[in-house]
Length: 300
Image 1: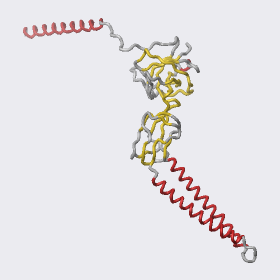
Image 2: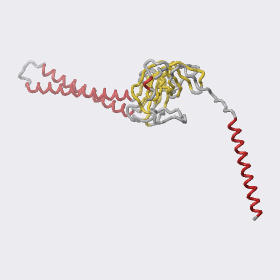
Image 3: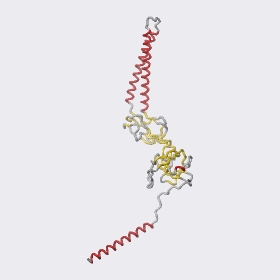
Image 4: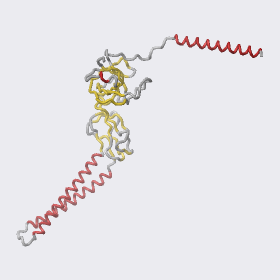
């Protein structure tokens, strides 16, 4: 019994000593200076600046180039970073079936033209008869009607050919405007469908880019048209670049571009303000890149 009491006493003393050492170490850690941040935060360039997160877009927004009809991709005529002009071919959908049917329609046009020539010749010969007793009036009326019917058939055949030619031209997907190819998401042999979530091609203008800034709805009343703004690339607070005001989109929407900060609210509603700037070769801006920016705004 006495031995058990002595053992309990020394265990208690050991526990108190351990707690004392732990407290001493924690105090020593608290007294250590906080290490500086690896990168300093950008400073506000304006007295009443509003901070916002921006997303880089191509000028005039990105163009998701789709296909008009479902089909197998025969060839892709462009690659990423290629600059294209409006109307330039981008990719080709399999058109063999359309070409075969177009050949059939063109042959029908040839048949209709031959029929019209034959019926017209017969009608003209009857019209040329001088003696009215030699040709019945009813037969002339029937011949004239036959000519009108064959003419209508010829026009219908030509319209069908034109319709098929338009469809054939649509199977060559062309650039809707000048720009740079940002993404190529299809390959020859793949099956492309309209309305796919991932477009076959992404097109945009990169010489001048567009910045879409998300301003918290609580700060939205302070934004004014023509406001000045300065942007900073992530991790580069010493390289500011000026932004030119474009427009304010007058609709408060749920925030969709998240920065990943721990204190960021995902249910925030924002006002979107658009700016533009020239893309620089020393620090290029890429579509989809996030930047920090400050917007000059009057104090409330």
